[in-house]
Structure formats: structure tokens, C-alpha cells
Length: 186
Image (cartoon, rainbow, N blue to C red; front, side, top):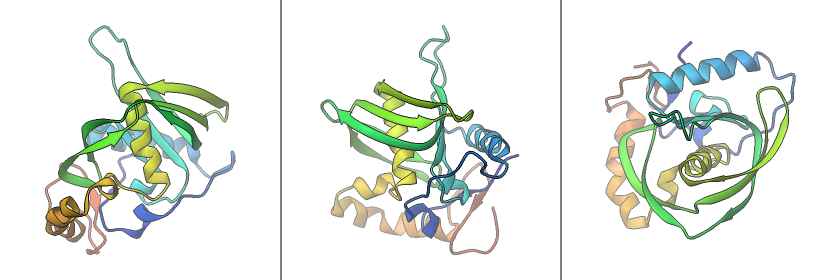
């Protein structure tokens, strides 16, 4: 089932999320719904706050090339980034909660992360390159941060009216969204 994606300006996107337990209600269904929602919106990652839940859960699927190499699809529960290393590099990021805005964001290319998967098996692993970047973006969501928080004050001022328009629902998205300054869904 496709869930509405929460738009910029909703307080749930600024909350530091809480860990969940193995018996979290309907977790498998929630994960399935999050993948449906992410694929429908043509995303590569989605965090629980983006569907209105302030819990430490996010999913990633960066896809694969034509040889099915570099496929990276995972569920992250109660994740903790232990280490970020390497020289920061810029990449033009977007966010399903902030449609039609993309900005260069600096991130380190290598991370070490500890998390539980959907079967409650704990992992600790090193991730590099684009999957590391997507993880860092989604991890920021469960820490109450958005990619726009990393921008300079000048850039934030330049985007202010566009961000306000998104929170009011004055934006086109080809997926279902919930806007903080509206009572209806689009």
C-alpha cells in the first residue's frame, strides 16, 4: 500500500526518532508499504518520519546497473552510524519530502554502520560510495535533519519561499503527499 509522504514543514521531520522493539506492531507490513511508497515516488531511500512515524527505521534501494552489479537494497532498524571517513564530496541531492528542490550536499564517502535488518539480525558493516550517501541522507531523517539544514544561510534564504510553498501544498509531485499547512492530501 502506498502511503502519503510527509511534506517539508511537518514537525515529524524535525524529531529525533525513537528506537523500536522487535515486536513493533505490523513492522513487516510497514516495511512493505514503505518500499511500495518509495518505488511509486521513484526514490532510492525512505525514512519512517517521511511517512509520519518518528521511529528509527529507514529503507534503501539504490538499484543496480544492467549487469545487476552494485545492487544495494536494505532495511535499517535502530541504525547508528559509528564512523564517517574520507574526503567530503558534493552531490546534488533531493528528497521526496521536498519535491522540486535539489542542492549540492557535502558528505564523506565511507561509513561504518550498526543496525538491525527486517529479521532482527544485527549487522555492523562498512559502506562506501553512493549507498553510503543514501544511508547518510536517510539517517539524517531519523536524527531530525533534512538536507536543507546543511545549506548556507544565503542558500536557505534563497529557497525560503519555495520551501514555504511546499509546506502549503503548492508543489507538483506525482505521488501522494500530506502537507502540514493543509488538512487534505494531494
